[in-house]
Length: 86
Image (cartoon, rainbow, N blue to C red; front, side, top):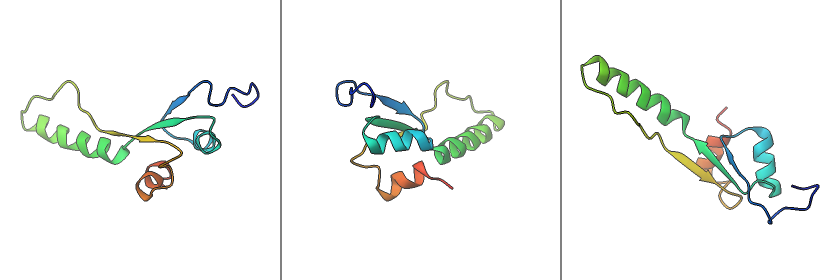
């Protein structure tokens, strides 16, 4: 994108987060990152496992939420915790 000067001509959406993706978002090469919420995934996984162990039927689809991160909201406290969980 950078080398071909296609920034803002082609829009790129990335999924999950890694150092390279975050850097590209900051540089404007990637326009958006869709980031999963690992705490929700773990919490819901345990909650559903307990429900199944108690005999309740599990749903086929469980939505654990994602966050849409752009250059406009990358530096909010909540998004920083998602991008840098360590």
